[in-house]
Image 1: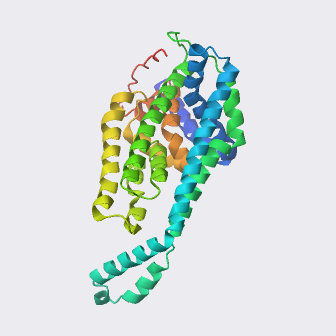
Image 2 (image 1 turned 90 degrees about the vertical axis):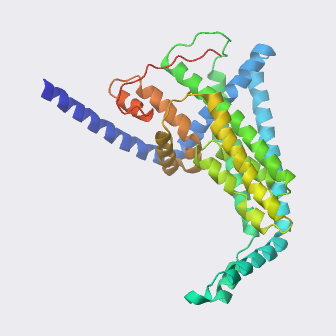
Image 3 (image 1 turned 60 degrees about the vertical axis):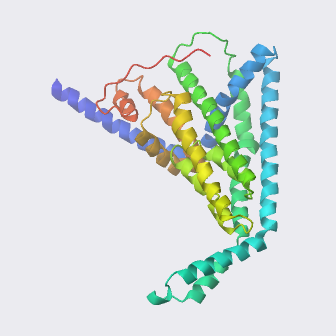
Length: 353
C-alpha cells in the first residue's frame, strides 16, 4: 500500500509538472487574447467598487454607473497622455542644449580618467559618445508611454471584456456575507488592486510633484512611470527612482543640488511608502513570500512582458488561493507563502465590503 501510494504521488507530481509546462506554452501562444482578457478582469475588479458606490449611494442604474465610470477613466487617461506629449515636445525642443551639456559632461569625464595610459584614444571615444542623440530619450519615453496608454485605454478587446464583466457582476451590498472560493479570491484581489492603486497614485503624485518643483523636465512622465512601476514589487521602485537620472544629468539648467535632490527625494518617497505606509495598509492580504513574488515577476515577465510583470503579484495570489483548495496542490500553496514545512494555514475569511 505504501509503495502504491508513493507511486501515485510521483505520478501526480509528474502530471502537475507536465501540465504546468503545457499551460506555460499555451499562455505564451495565446497572449494576444489572454493579456487583454486578464487586464480586463483586473480593471473590472478595480472599477467595481466605484460602480457599486454609485449604485448604492447615488441610486443610479447599474448600466449608467458603468458608463460614467468608463467615461471618467477614459478622460483621465486621455488627459495624462496629453500632458505626457506636451512634456516630451518640450524635451525635443531643448534637445540642442541637452546635447551640448552631454558633450561637456563626456569631455570632463574623459579628461579626468587616465584613458590614454591604457591605450584608449580619447578623441574617438568622445566622437562616438557625442553622436548619441539626446532627443531619443524623449522618443523612447513617449513610445513606451504611448504603448502602455494604448494598451490600457484604446484596446477594443479590453474594453469589450471589461464592459461584459462589469455588467455580469452583481452589486455588492455592505455587510453582505461572502461564501465560496471564487468570492474569496475576488474579494482579496479587489482589495489588493484598489489599495495598490491608491498607494501607487500617491507615489506618482509625490514623485511628479517633487520633480516639477525642482524644475526637472518630463516630471509628469516620471510621475506616471512611478505610478505604473509601483505595481512591480521591489524592482519597480528602484527603476522609478533611477529613471530621471539621464535627463537630470544632461539638463543645463539643473544645479548640482537640484540634481541630487531629484534622485534622493523620490528615493526617500519610494522607501517610506513601500516599507512603512504600504505594509500597514495592505497587511498580509496576499500572504506571498518575497522570493515567490520575485520568481513570479521573472516567469510572467518572460510570458507576457511588462504587462505580465505588472500582473504577476495578483495572478500568483489567485493561484495560491486556488492551490489551497486542492489536497494535491496545498504544498505548492504553502511554498508560495514561505511555509516550507508544507503545513497549510487556514484560509482567512474575506472581510465584508
